Image 1: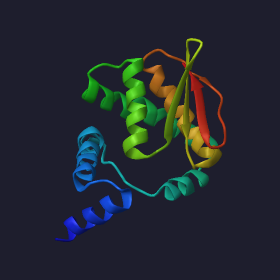
Image 2: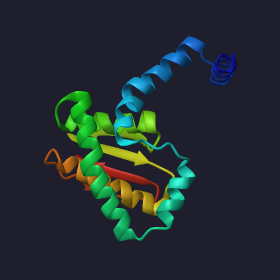
Image 3: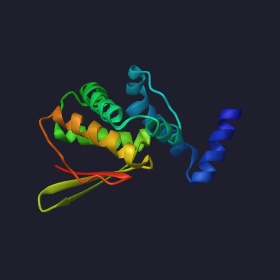
Length: 158
């Protein structure tokens, strides 16, 4: 009975029905958790990730971003969408925003250029990690984003 009470409490707090909340939970599992379990996914507070980044050297963070960005996205994109493309890479980033809560994703199409912002709360070292992650991920589809990093956001253009 505890699970049902928890769902009722969360649904009320979010001002949604239990059916809507259950649907959101099932979508998170189907669209993210199920695939990420292949990678022994960890769920940890953002503040913990920020502390880990703060304790690391910039070169180590950049290398971690390059390695992770060239590995996990490739496997997940191929498993979920079947092909490495620009569109599927963007879908991956949107899924990371929606389900992993690693950053907030936003995009603007202006004069034929797509500008994407990944806003986060990890500070400059978080930006360093995410910039190298994104750069490695798009290298898989032969794209080189133009970056305009900020302390709490990775802004890039495709």
